[in-house]
Image (cartoon, rainbow, N blue to C red):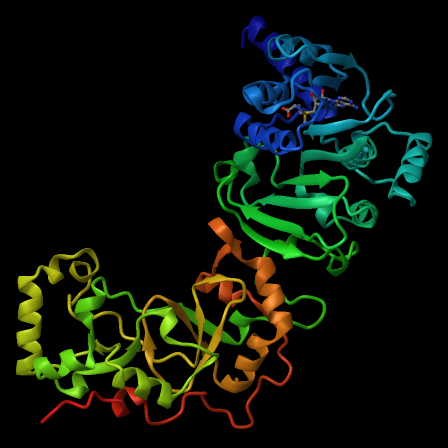
Amino acid sequence: MTNRESFKSRAEVAEQARERTLGQVFTPPAVAKFMAGWVARGRPRRILDPSLGRGVFIQALRELDGRLPRGTRITACEVDPAMIEASAGACASMQVDVRREDFLGARFSDVFDGIVCNPPYIRHHESKRGEAMFRAFDRLAGERLSRLTNEYGLFLIRIWSLLAEGGRAAVIMPAEWLNADFGVAIKRHLLRENAIDAIIHFKHAADVFDGVLTTAAIAFLRRGRGDDETISFQTVDGAGELGRPARSIEYRVSALAPDSKWTPLFNPRVVVADGSVQLGDVARCTRGIATGANRFFVLKGSEVCAAGIDRRDVSVCVSKAAQVRGDRLTQRDVDRMIAGDERMFLLTPREPLAAAVARYLAAGRRDGIDRRYLPSHRPVWYRPEQREPGAIWVNVFARGSFRFIRNEAEALHLTCFHSIYPNAGIDAERLHSELCGATTQERIRSETRIYAAGLSKLEPRDVERIWINPVRLRSGRRKSSRRAGSSRRRAVPSCPD
Ligand SMILES: C[S@@+](CC[C@H](N)C(=O)[O-])C[C@H]1O[C@@H](n2cnc3c(N)ncnc32)[C@H](O)[C@@H]1O
């Protein structure tokens, strides 16, 4: 090793030590842009970056162009002169008031409408904070903080205290505070203040922080939230997913306990404190049958008759959500629809094919049905996936409440519904009434994705995540809820002789 190399490596070692003691972990521009964009939605006139670094947030604010009000003033704190120098380019055109100062001790003459921050992550034993500083922060938090509180925890408390009415703060940190003992007082303080709008948890934080940190979460704080506003817990795989419709679970503030671990709350397969379980623990949900050509595969009774198709080659199937009114599909409903010559018969041919079916399929081939996307990707083009009738159905799209339908008629359905299959020993009737209950509806509302114009959508995975009360769901006898004698065999078109 040459002298120069050994000198260089000593410089690198010193650099690394400084980065470590100052908690210098830098935010990727895409993440900074997302956070700055959220803060800018509050039209902030006074913005603060408490730990400037190389100025990635200032750069992100600059790139928001016209989305900030004219004359917005930006203040930033930074203790490392090398960082202040490195941020000069980003700060130049934004006229940032850069203060070389410890944010936790700095005095500000004003509060801020927007704060965007990646606070230093400093290991407890490397932090030099004394008892006097902690006492001041106890007062801010309204309770005694753990003396093991990480520097970023103190930043979070100070940031909240500096937020103006209606102000927004986005703070990216390691996710440990959500579970650690030192996080309990912080969570209690933020819940008491109704401060948290949302938390986004990164599944793969190493992608966000270049392998430096193993966990990461962004806390979104807003001053002036309504009493009935929920807190959104969102999970993303990595930075690339930010801004896309996120998997989100909404919690009422009162439902969150500060002394419990919060990272499991991002994970849907968890039992909540009130004894609820998720539907996926007692049943399974699958989407409906996709034919790829509904008018060919689902026939009217008159068409079945005209083609001479045997009733054993078709199954009763509902193709549109509007065909089912109420919360039960009875045999009488099915009979009524068949009598009205609605499209109700799904082609489910036996093998070997009957002559009438073979003729019908040949006509379909002539019309190119077998070359359409879904049929051409099936092992047998004319055989859509085989399903047992689900005991309970739920509509895929809804404006307002989702409808759970007890499928008494044991019919099949296309993709307008998802089917719920109770596990052995679970009573379908009881499960159905639990799902129709007001509590379940309220929980679903808080967990569904809302599309344009108030339209909500449920995926089968969303259905399995629905919280339900498991009490009294078990049937007396341990048997599947499916009754003998399927209407697929009973309901038939009445063809003229
Ligand atoms: C985690 S880095 C984040 C930098 C930048 N905001 C980013 O997101 O890339 C934290 C920065 O805060 C600075 N810093 C550390 N302690 C500080 C303090 N008490 N007050 C202000 N800045 C501090 C560090 O030097 C470092 O540049």
